[in-house]
Length: 239
Image (tube, rainbow, N blue to C red; front, top):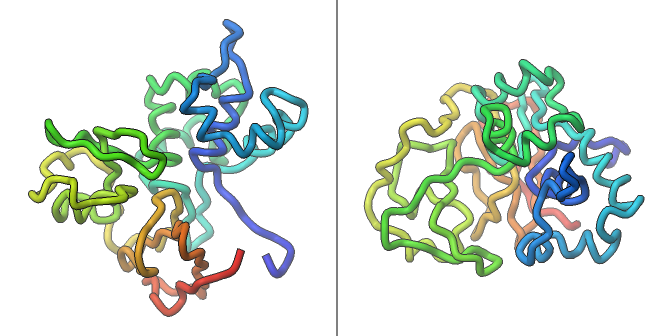
């Protein structure tokens, strides 16, 4: 940013905004205008309205953002680096950028292409065992939990779950439903993500993965070509 240039990737909020302000061939919004979605999108709606020229102009710009960036030694993705999902998208969109004609399919979430887009922008979730639920940061009741894909296959529900304000309400046992979840292989280039609303002190999640989304402690990672991420390079910043 100090050089007047920044790279950005598309996340779930940008994608949701794009869908909210566009309609399918049946005239219906590609993302429902229900109470929950309006609350999630409130700050944007208050400033730009719904389907206005300004709203469409901004969401047109959102559509230019790539779903991932591989910078040669460092990777960026909003929620989950899943090589299989990237390969699916790349067959149609080699540069990782969605086109307008993709949007109805993406909104339906029913094809491999659409599910691949959802994985990169929203991560991966699995169902909690029967009888368990939690409320997210917006007080919405949830029965599925986001899993830390950089350590998928290891640890308990409380250790592997992400974006859960109070993990003590989750099961105590080991996660037993990880088959088929994306796993980021050891030795892969380091990847930086957002999305997960991390709590507590800044930390490196794995030698090759770090989340930069700390709502109460904004931070930046200063990368200098290292193959393994270093805690000393993860530093608080002022927004």
